[in-house]
Every structure is written in structure tokens, then in C-alpha cells.
Amino acid sequence: MTIGATLDGFHKEDVISIQENRSSASPLQLYAAFRRHHPRLAMPVAYVTESGFRLGRWQDRQRIARMLGTLSPQRIAQLDAIGFVWSDDDLPLPAVSPADGKRRRMLTEIAAYREEHGDALVPANYVTAEGEQLGQWLYRAVKKWRAGALPDEERRPLAALGVSPGPRPRGPRTSAQHTGSAVHRRDRRLSADARL
Image (cartoon, rainbow, N blue to C red; front, side, top):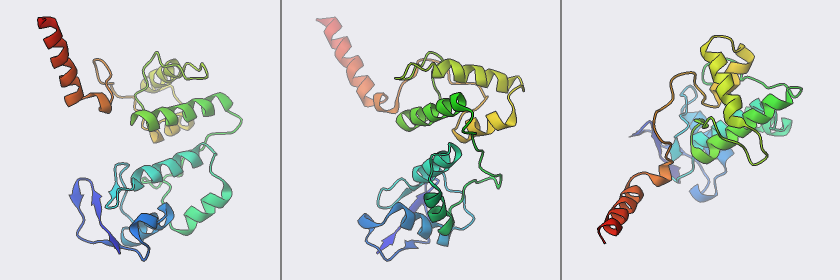
């Protein structure tokens, strides 16, 4: 059985071959097969196998878990054994000190927010379920980053999570689920109600 791959929007001519049935192949097997055929290719977060598995997101989750210190040594050894690429830029993966509990909690919350919303554009007024003022913490960190006052050991984990010091999009925040036809249907319904 073979698994084709769509990478950066176009279908790769070479097909990743694995012995397992597509539906039962583990993420480790899919990743190992990808790396055998593409040892130096940076895998985008949006990479999806032909069977629909989000291999790019899976890779990203492993990197973040290691950065935050939540990946077990056994899992790290498993990933190293299959040629896991920890960083696309040949720099060591940033590590967050276990002694820095507040920063580690906030970075973990940013990772959770990103997992739920698809990006790290945390609103400035965002408060976690535990009452942490994540939006304000991130706002202050990005402000320091823009001023050149954020140390590298604090900047690199933020960058790894997709946070940028660049300008944020303007306007109301809408999630991917609420754009497009659902918004238009609601607007049409409101317009029809207004005519009554």
C-alpha cells in the first residue's frame, strides 16, 4: 500500500511506500517513511498525508512537547531512532527551564490556544480557564520583543510556537469555522428578519 503526499499545495511525484495498511500506520511509521524519502525537506505544519493524517501538526506537537519538557526520554529516543528532525533551521530546539514555572505555564497555554484556534494570535484580553491572564502576558512579551529587550532564551520558544513581533491583523477576530457561508447565511437571515 502507498501513501501519497501533498506538500505546499502540490502533489509530490514520488510516493511514500510503507508496508502497513494506511489506516493502521502509526505516526512514527508515517514520519519514518517521509524522512526516508525526504531526509532534508522541511515539513510544513500544514502537511497532510493522502490518508488524511496531519503529519506536519504531529511533528510540531512533538517539537513543542520536547521544548516544554513534557516529552519522556523514551519518546525522545523513539523519535531520534526514526530520524526525527527537531528543528528546521539547524539550531538546537529551545528549552524552557523547569525552574521557570510561570513562563513554562504560559508557553503551555499558548500551545493549547494554538492547538484550538490554529494560530498563536492570542487576544490581549484572553484569560485561561485557570484564570491566567495569558493575553496580557503575551502582549508584554511581544512589546519587549519589538523593543529589542526580550532575551533570546525567551524569544526563541515564542517563535517556535508561532508568535511574531510583527503587526497583528486588524479588525474583529473570527475563527475559521465562522467565516464563509455560515456568516453569509446568518447575515441573510438577519436581513430577512429585518424586512418582516
